[in-house]
Amino acid sequence: MKRLKEFVWPAVGLVALAVSIWLLHRQFHGQAVGPKVLADLKTLSFQQYGLAILSTLVAYAALAWYDRIALMHLGVKHISWAFIGLCSFTTYALAHNIGASVVSGAMVRYRAYSTKGLSAAQIALLVGLCSLTFGLGVLLLGGIVLVADPVQLRRLGRLLPHVLTEPAMARLIGLACLGLVAAYVIGSALRLKPLIIGRVRIEYPHLNIAMRQLAASSAELLGAAGIIYFALPHEHNPGYLVILGIFIASFSVALVSESPGGLGVFELLFIKAMPAMPHDKVLTALLVFRLLYLVLPLLFAAVVVVIFERRRLAEALHADAAAKLAAEGPKPDGKVLNGPARPVKLPADP
Picture 1 (cartoon, rainbow, N blue to C red):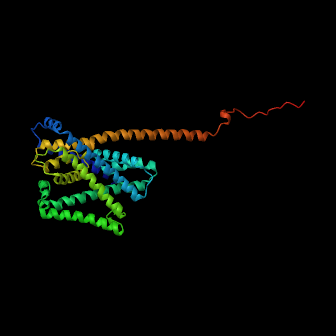
Picture 2 (picture 1 turned 90 degrees about the vertical axis):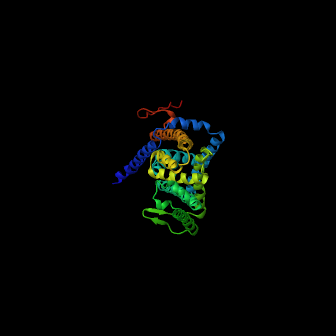
Picture 3 (picture 1 turned 120 degrees about the horizontal axis):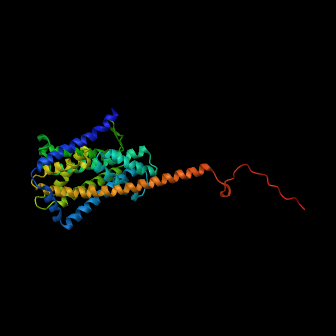
């Protein structure tokens, strides 16, 4: 049964990818999308690209803060910011593209943090806390968007039941999201007992850790959504708050789908949620997002992994050689004596 479960989510991801690509094909059937998107990429201004790159840096800096906060919760202080930043960057660059982000992220973190003396249990807790940090950001910003502008949920009316897209229900969902965040903060402030939901056990951290979690996750989502917002044209642009809400919904569903990189799923939801804007313009902005947030980081992360594993291999070979020399023991004067020692006859005194 356990082995069967290992194949369930990858299968779900492939099915989600296939269905999404089929729906996108139907959406753009008969249209010359490629030339339009390439032409739109050339029309983006230097300022738009610059702001999109700045948003990417903000997002990845916040992701590094995820790991730093988790290490603070564990009481680990000896790991430098540079190491944490590289580990976090590599983790998310691979996880966002490969899919199964919890599993792939755990593998990368284990390889990296185990070299710094962290146990498997500590790394597992770190991974869980980083996932919780992201979830808190989704609840906080998603709740704010739904409470501030509940009508925007109607953009997903074709994909959600009608009852969920009603403004009153949307605002109620938003308040529920904010209530969960408030309960987490209050539990941290009062140092309540762990919250157990089925097999999930949530330990309330110190209040300063909880507040950092909210700040880091909010910065990451605001930065990632900013990439798409700045890559969209001003005409028919619904505004940053709407883009943020669509991004949170699309990105969360893409992660849950386990589709590699959310490919197809992410684009489909975004296009369906923005019917007033030309689809090729939306695809252009999403392509900029994929290049800056997914593809380029993946290429850089691959180089980091190769260098790291090569160094680990060199260290392992050096350690084996040193152990072999130690096992052979010291050699007097650097020479090897063959056979039994012979007595030396000294000359007699005159």
